[in-house]
Length: 81
Image (cartoon, rainbow, N blue to C red):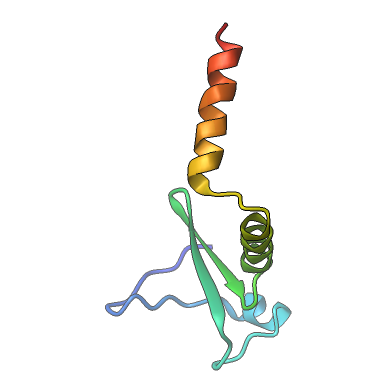
């Protein structure tokens, strides 16, 4: 499918997709940037639900981004030995 973005960032979702996803004019959609693309999903999205679960688990276990990056650096260093 190809569509054109309008002045205010509006795009048209084809009627067959809206129908199959049961979307209406008041539907809430989740917009996520994935690499160089855009993922548009009915809300709540599986992506958001899964991400929230990971964030909650990480906080409960004291896992931080800094810690993960530090561990990754150690693992990469050990593989180069």
